[in-house]
Length: 393
Image (cartoon, rainbow, N blue to C red; front, side, top):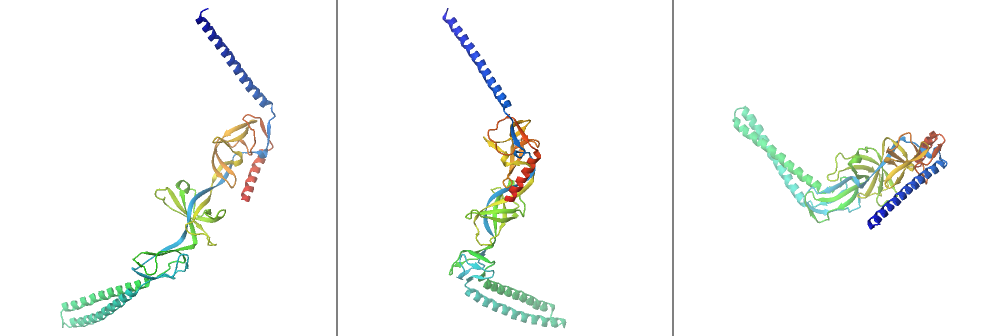
């Protein structure tokens, strides 16, 4: 026999052996699958009580939206200079309480007093000249009626009288302006509060509109929080809110959503909301960082208890009992209500599906199962548990 013939005989033999081995493997795998199915059929069905299962139910979920923010005073003011002069006295410092109308700074008024004397004299002189021109006008009015002087002579006297009237008005305005400057030389607090910033010292000369002091009223505070545009539609004025302050862990302060800004902040695509905050114990300060949590009430949705859902490899599923068998069903979930321990189910289940409500180990697809008892009992048990959770919280 040639070498070529021997090679062909060897190849044919190997191929035959591989074919026989593959067929044997398939037979063994098929037999194992059949044996496994037979074992499942032979195992007694798992039994679940009516309280172990639930069905989809329309529930109103309460969601919580949380936003960062900062505490600020509702009423605050920066007091600015209304004249250009030297500061002679500043009787308050940072942290001092002041009342509305209290003196908080004084300016040097020597130059203003001199100006007041000058303008007072100018005003008096203008009034004296006005009296003279008025007498002249009245006399000329009588003379023109008797044809002793011409109409032009009377018009000249009348014009002089009108000009002096204007001069008196101008002198009076300048005098009143000086009086106002003298009054502004004594700076008074526009609001009651606490001095937050003192920008001047006695002896400094400041210009017009220069900042002198900042006053903050800590009796009325609010939190300004930044809300994404996507969440604004779920907020309404008057909603209750819980505020946590940085540096005060474990203590939530009850607030109220007071205002919602009508426009977004440039460059951030967020909208500012304002939550009023009581400060009865005077522990809060403007500028503190805060976290605002607003509880929102949504429309009714189909929901399940959170205990019924499982997660694995990034997927969410539930175990159902369907036609006497355990079935693993992937579901799509939505909003959560941590307080009531409910979660919205958006897809993957129907209202007739029976879902295992609690955690069971070693469940597999296809295992025989049955529910003992009336499913109506399960529904009532779920409602009672939810009400118990709400009362506890």
